[in-house]
Image 1 (cartoon, rainbow, N blue to C red):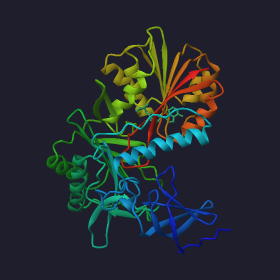
Image 2 (cartoon, rainbow, N blue to C red):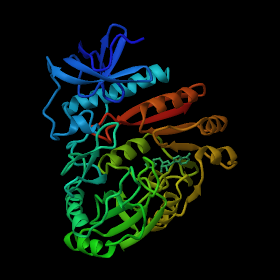
Image 3 (cartoon, rainbow, N blue to C red):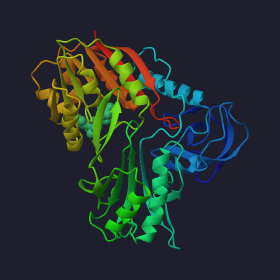
Image 4 (cartoon, protein in one colour):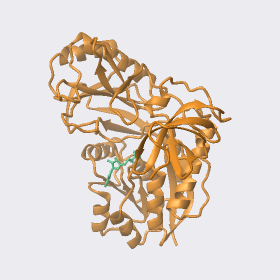
Length: 449
Ligand code: SAH
């Protein structure tokens, strides 16, 4: 039984920060998590709800401010929930991220090793190359777009977001007017009626290319041609418009069916001198500046020799593997998403890389059945981490070095714990791929004991 009740106001002092950036206060035996509350700050907190035995609250009144608190650039950052750390000095953000990795390795991974300070950006704003927004319409017929209020499907209207590309923001703004002009009907999540659900924009950092993806309930919709004509006239920088059909009631943004409505089916960008073309639904790193830091730091860790075979697992469009292939005998790339896998094959051709093999498969299944030579593993799984099939197979082979790149310190720590009976963690380097948020990317080097 909790002592603190819903709607009750508790005065307390923030004693710690959770892994997802929430301030923590204690009330007797109760622990309350609260957004926008930082270390040592004292506040009145209203209890909003309890989930899985944990209480969540919101700040009603602040009595003292953290020395690291700053005025955020964005007015809605405390309700949108995307930027947990925008109200903190950038140095403090990096400090919390380094600590998040340290704590995860220590308490979840039971691993005792040094963690290097998180590498930040010179300018930590407007960095994202991918922006996706739901659109809505109010009772007066005004169209708007924005982020969902935390834990809801209510859209908070915005004009631009200060971690997303400015060019993309101006296109989203104009699309709002074109939706009205061409009578495109906004999708209604309750009734399932209507067409337009989300607009996703991908920008290229190194090339003059820009892709607009219209996520719609049906691929052919009334007003489509005139809408696209107008949009590409107002924004000649658009090199591709793709319709993606997603009629399902789900939180997953993209569906499976796609049709190119204008220009090319892919967008081109480059990392460390190699070019990559990416389809609408393929994974691609969202921070084009830090990705070069991430890959260089990771590949500097080992000296790949000409007789060695590298496995690039969870390969996306083949980026890290292709960079590693310059020094290796061969790189084997494994990726489960079919369009990313196809992009990877084409990208190798584009970059004249001939010493790579590509498999579209589950990484664990693939390596369990693979009987050839593998000397080095580079693995970069999604947030949920890797799995027993993959890790136990790697441990059963005679592989000396594993580079594990992760975007979730807690699942990383869980997986490193499984590796730890046979591998020692030699190097841990967090990299800030996601400034203003509580997320952090991390490179680790494992060496066979
Ligand atoms: N290394 C790439 C991609 C990392 S993101 C880069 O740096 O860009 C993780 C990738 O793993 C995604 O492309 C996702 O589609 C893929 N993936 C997810 N589950 C997988 C699985 N079980 N087996 C293989 N690939 C998987």
